[in-house]
Image (tube, rainbow, N blue to C red):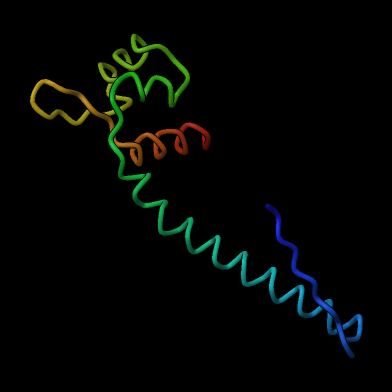
Length: 99
């Protein structure tokens, strides 16, 4: 069931209406930006498996192994498992884009 709300504008000039809409949009944008900033550090600190790293770079796991061997990317080892820091991978991408 859909409910509709009716709003009547009494003695509101077009300029005042435009200002109200602008302020409302600005508030919503600020909230979205602050939410994305809160979530971003968590995402950047994420550890990726070899397969996830390969998907991130859109390459094969063989390429990831070669890049690790060539020390282009540095793995984090936890027991027998190998992970890569997403923030370090983003750093590698940024460096390669500057060349």
